[in-house]
Image 1 (cartoon, rainbow, N blue to C red):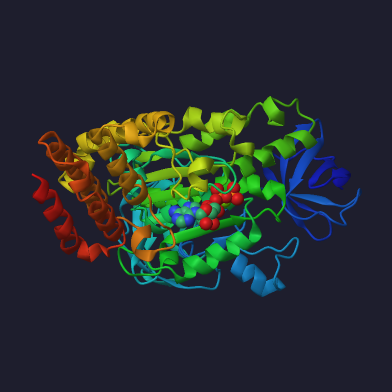
Image 2 (cartoon, rainbow, N blue to C red; image 1 turned 30 degrees about the horizontal axis):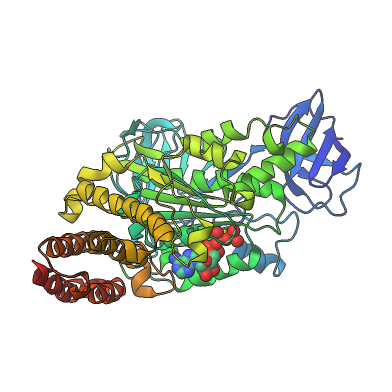
Length: 574
Ligand SMILES: Nc1ncnc2c1ncn2[C@@H]1O[C@H](COP(=O)(O)OP(=O)(O)OP(=O)(O)O)[C@@H](O)[C@H]1O
Ligand SMILES: [Mg+2]
């Protein structure tokens, strides 16, 4: 019998274990705790147990399951709240009280539930990985495409319409292979695509500072580092709520439990601004709070990205938010330390950077497998929590090496309550140039030029404020004082957004580009007036500030009506 020979925390050694594979799942002890083989030394296997190991002792039995950690993918994922290894929190709690009982097994998808399946192909055709077999409608609105699993191909012998559970056979291949509504995929293996495509389409975030200055692409990747309390979680939540994605996967990795309770309550209430439907209907939450075992945190990120790839394969735009990647890296560090691996920088395993790179590689826009031809994307936005807000630490640095953009959150800006506290001097987006034509097309505004003007204004503002702090603002020329005034309202009202004000929290691209263009127009008109001999004090600077303050809180539908005032003020200066 295979038994535990050593145990430290959630790591255990078991012997003898021969006919098992690396990353195979095991059941440990009388309670059958879920674990995974993470190392072999001869016939001794090192296991990481995904659950609380209190009470587990040397001699406890270990059974290899023959399966690796897989995600169950199918109808019912949308709206689910899963733990790091894919167990639904709601149904687990039903089965075992408030907390997930150790060893509790619950399939990700409800095995009882029946889904109405409508075929889109008929018997007799050749099918291969990724082909759309048919559709299940979820939440009355979402087309969940039922796909041939990536590694399956053959002649379709039969296919049926009807109400099926995820385990029922909905179709068969000529060789007898059954096809079902759900499929499984090992979470540590990327799902294949047909062709990678350039990230040249914007994923609109609804946050002006990002959409205007540091845009995100469909299939793009962003790192969001920020010290304690700088607004990382709020940024991730804003994206989950407002980004122009079809599906959102939110991985809460090692964050506070009460914060997750807030998220759940929040998401349950929230309405999708684009279609008026509950936000949860297009969201999957993977929740591994800091009071769950460290090793489950390590898995949760892979589970999240696998679910995202599955929806990408249907042809959807998926946005994955991870909060925070640092907790994932800490889980790696923890595991490595207990495996007594030789530590790299600051104790992180030397493999941390390459594993992080491999994770980011799973994002992207792609032509997906199968017929009909379609494209999908997985975008990845990861919060990073550098200790002391020091971006030179290994996790931030590793993320920056692979991410396509940096949204740097700054403690000083957060203290000044400039939210989102994005430091525009250090932040960047490698997508800005590629996305410029598409953003210009969507807004009807010369987006690249507008962005350059706003960045230039912020840069000039920083220089002038430095001078002002040395000489005093009184000594400055009127034209410079005008720059300070307009830049001030741009920082406060154009780039600032209050996450707690329903009208301000989400800014459609039309509002973002309009506000920025009006600010630049105000600057140019006022500057022209100064050059023509008008006094600074005679300019309607206070009026501008008030108008922008009102505009940011204007409901989307009233945008045109609310800009009239501002346009009149600007017109009056010409
Ligand atoms: N857009 C915003 N609008 C208004 N307030 C904000 C905004 N962003 C952040 N804040 C304020 O900053 C606080 C901290 O934000 P948040 O919890 O997102 O920070 P964090 O970086 O995730 O912190 P931690 O390091 O603890 O995880 C919020 O509770 C809120 O008061
Ligand atoms: Mg946070």
